[in-house]
Length: 321
Ligand code: MTE
Image (cartoon, rainbow, N blue to C red; front, side, top):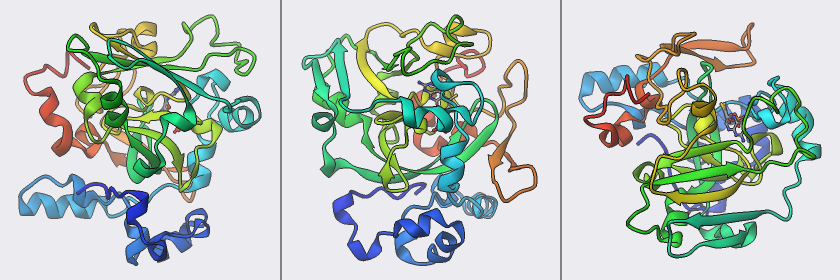
């Protein structure tokens, strides 16, 4: 298994890793020999292809996959609404992004459209902790212990009609709160993303409300963001206010912006280069290293091929990138 999925209610309090253990990486690593903290680790065993030798090789290659630190995850971000520099989101979003009250509009081709207040949208009993790899299209990556609930729960509640084939998502757009000037004329805000309905229903697709057991920081897309771990990070849209079921493939921000460089699918694929750089390797952010990262090989579908590759059988992934 690649991830340990558990409901909060399933974790005895004795097994829950104290927050202090997360904040301090050393302590966390020490603790991870025990059962509790290990539950949060994205150990490569999960993604290992079947067959003993390959499995063993894979495990060896992946032994270093402990989660990134809270500091790394919350201070090196992409959230262009708040600026282009990796430091801008943590500098500006916490004081500017207003997350209460928060409404999520569910509409389009479904039987139960609704405007939800966030507290009605999230059912605390379904919240789980899951550690996933996050691979940005810019070729940096992290391992993040998210907290959230399956996107499939929301979709089932909405009851999409037979005509619905896709789901689209929109981020809040409020120029008062998001005063990044340089991108304003370039991007057709709000930031939008989309998935095919079967991708959205896949159990790995997660709506995230927190990380490291805490509420989601503003710079990571509070109070609600998507995480689709086998796709490039830009599919994992932040600060979601709209979820719409559509019949046609919905327009998405980066594919609209630069269709030659970014596609709708955006599945992590080391064999399909970005027109301006290779995707064969990635920089795993690691602030203990001199340059702030380690160079590692990128895995097909970000290491989740066993779980998701079947959805793309027969598709030309060079064409549908
Ligand atoms: N969502 C919105 N609304 N705006 C953005 O600029 N950037 C995307 C994605 N979601 C982005 C977004 C990109 S390119 C990446 S790699 C991830 O968020 C980064 O998530 P993180 O900052 O939590 O690591």
